[in-house]
Length: 354
Image (cartoon, rainbow, N blue to C red; front, side, top):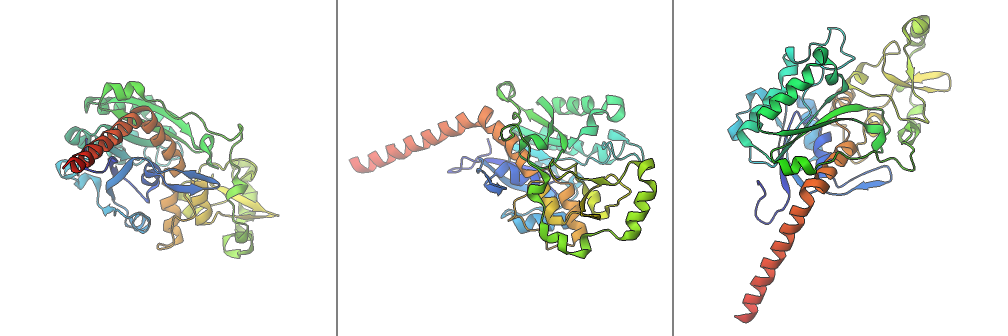
């Protein structure tokens, strides 16, 4: 175990960390809407991403700092010891929406980056790992991509659980479906683990209207021009585009493409009266379940959209990490705390007797 003396937190290394959705979620101790997501017994000790703008946002929000580095440049034996490896490996190759060019899956260079996770797993052999990717991974390469990826993780020495989760079932105002792959070095951990069950309040989901900034309705910069609207209306029936969102439901999936949102695309947009407007970067962060305290404005709005759209929703990651704690870690951590207390009591008694 990579725990340090006097610290019972499990150490985390984070690849492709982006602006930090997975890292915030696994550490916990943040608020979203009216809920507090408690601190979890994990501590990120190493984080890397090759995007300098996402890294800037990350480093504005975390005490530990992210390195700007291509994961292919990482020397595995130089990665700090850790208990869990995170990796939301790039998903463009597997995305259902990435039809031009057609999906190449693991035959594309970006689709091969999960091998960098495998290299580190083979070298460092952490107790757990968590990988994340788009729903399209299920069907990529005629259904062959996911089994191949799972097989590579198994060859690295891990037992694998994977599941498709919908963010809207975990208190997040977004219908975001993502595959989570959780690996376990030890069979007992694998046997004990259960993915989190849907957690909706009285069976209802968080509505988009709960995270919309009405002040943005007053700012002309967020509204589409009449020319853009006329262009969309001319082809709307033919293209079935212009995805106006129902404020009473969770939002459709947002992506990095919000930086170039179009009424003729599949991007979710709002209708205010008779006018269309885009989401603000802060609204996009709200839709992704980032807390209001998470700062974005040290980079351009375009870069904010990209970073947030590529992120893993922190609340969803928190539920997965919490399930890991409850099924595999909690008893061990509690036992260590009891042992530490017993050692302390013995030392006190020795001092008293002396």
